[in-house]
Length: 75
Image (spheres, rainbow, N blue to C red):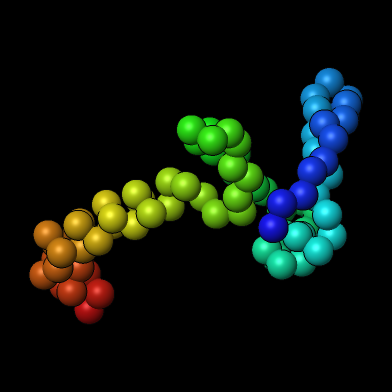
């Protein structure tokens, strides 16, 4: 789906409005944090933290490496 919007002045910043249907589809509400990711094609606005996958990989590696220590700590 492609929609267009207009950049508007908001105080000392600028912002864009997102159509209500898109907000509902992606479960985004006023006050929610979104992430702006620069891509080769432009700017991607996403509710998903792009660093989360990297953090989970680091966690999984650590949990495999220290599996026995984690079990001992859980007791």
